[in-house]
Length: 200
Image (tube, one colour):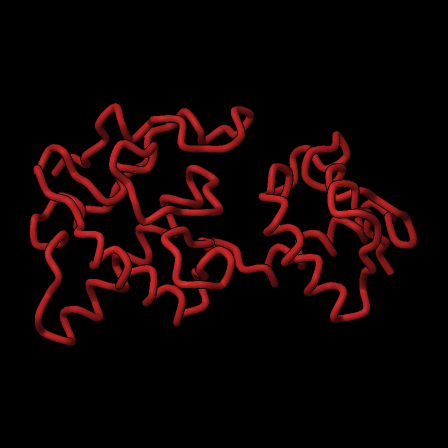
């Protein structure tokens, strides 16, 4: 069976044009081509399996397009093809999409932006702890301990080009750095628009 890789699947939903995956179409799983996948299952066991499959799809899709935040409202959005299969004429209802994101939140893979009950979620295809580990490994590899770097340098600087965290959402970087701060591995200082971080 051919995967639904309509032209919209390759729409530039990614934040960085330099990302190699930004122009490559996402390869949807076979479930995406089955109409029942878009209908909430009544049986609890079947529903749990459905939520797990949707969770895997959301994580893979966001990783592919390097999406760090995902709005539940998808009408006309670059990520519309995630929740709407135009070839089938089926889409996931907003309430069901919210249930998927809530399931992911319980699994530690999503979190409402701002911590409230909003319609935009952080999608943790890498958790803040995993991003923190990548930053810490880079600090060790490049002998940056006791150096002071701006947060902009970490995500946009030439020195981090080629790393997975280059182009990381600044707020998600903050979450990752807070992990290192709590471990006594970093200190953040300065004004909000020009913050620096020192690694230990």
